[in-house]
Length: 368
Image 1 (cartoon, rainbow, N blue to C red):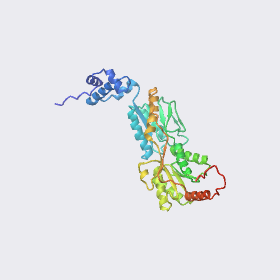
Image 2 (image 1 turned 45 degrees about the horizontal axis):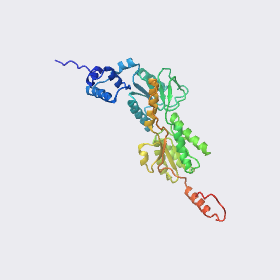
Image 3 (image 1 turned 45 degrees about the vertical axis):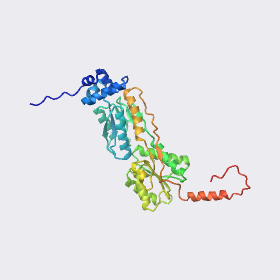
Image 4 (image 1 turned 90 degrees about the vertical axis):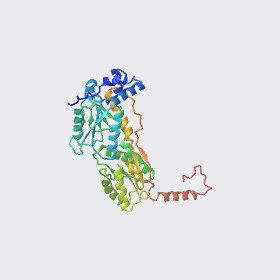
């Protein structure tokens, strides 16, 4: 004779075991204030002991919310997008939300809008548009629903009643990398960009151009890769053949690895003849030969800050905002140095300074 199915534990059972009211259980599980830490821990311990799981469908009907955030992502295995996605899941969990991801395919018509519609159909309280690409003239994203949408960069064509933009600036990162190389004394900086359909690639190139323009440095032709080491290697072979190239900013570390390989094969020493700066600070970057100077993005901070703003929009109440520093950080290592001959020029300048007759009055000591 089969045993009758055991009834799953309810919030009433949790309240009875914890010795509190059902309303208190509801407050604890919904993350509401005005509950002491001791009571909160008692309720959570009782829920764990009983194996209680909230009925999310009933809760959504009651609250008008699903406590779920949707992410429209490219489904890329690249370091930047995948790191951001992991950081988003962790930040959402800390805020009491689950994450649903719909991956788009690069080159698919209206891919982002299709992903957004799919997420809305599944029931989400807010949407994150992650790593968007330019879908062409017909790729405008008009979201008419009263659902907040978070983007980590301004996206031309993204429009809706509750659009939130928050994140680190790719333009700032490109400017930092280029300014570092110019500050070492290079006359100009070449650039290996990411695929031009990616808004992130355009942002980094804009930062590169802005830094060159501010320094009055000439702008060399831009080379376009596809984020892969193979495309960086192809660009690196072109750069290695040009003796005028002394400094290169590469839009991600994977392509920078390819550039380093091409330069080594061509006998162009790094950083003796050519300096290289990447972006992302992937885990192997510090262990390359030479260790790669690169620009690090704090994906954890970006995810926390963006989701705090999104949840504030969802709950229509100011929350404890994450005041993280979202500025990209230059990680200075050994792949960038002054251009060839710079040390000799400095020595020549010092010799000139030391040869100045002492009878010439001077109130300023020689810079060398």
